[in-house]
Image (cartoon, rainbow, N blue to C red; front, side, top):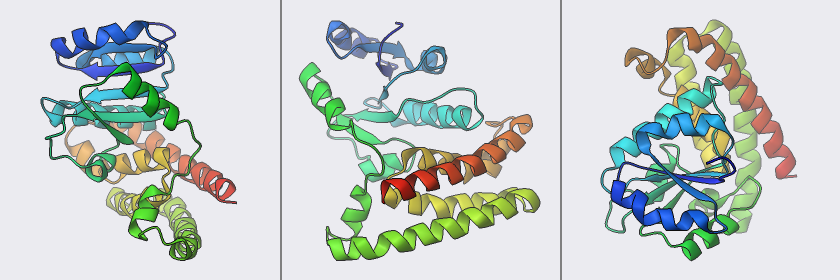
Length: 239
């Protein structure tokens, strides 16, 4: 599979067989069983991960949560695009799935041309203000007024995070992460959203055994570092 750029994780043997024909196109698409996705992702970089949610959303959502934890722990680097693939009749909305770590939704069945158009249309830098445009009903004066306020809020929250991470409790860090996620979400910063999704559930994930206690300190430090880095990147992108 070396050299493949797009990976589709599915638990459906039929889906793997159907999509195998796209493997030889210019898309460089590979399929993998959902249980083997993390190992495959850790071997070399991928541009996009498509996750099949067509039969049940739970395995794919659980996979993405596991991957987000591993990335924040420094165990792997996720693709720049995490995409949910769903049937048209499924109830999950793009906003709901984005808050679980997905960046976009694709409708099944996939075709080579459909996937090609999608990937080409996503070759753009962050930040993407689609959620902010939606909230403001595409009224540019409102958007122009909200962006500085969101940046100011993020700057204050990140400064508070640095203090809280040293002396505060895990629930306090989780609360800050939840608050920052809302701002990052409106400003379209995908990596920052992913980090906040993990950290806002940190106490619960520890209780569930999804996070090793030995990784908590490292994850806290990486979280602070990435929040500062993404904030500085955002300021540059927004001019």
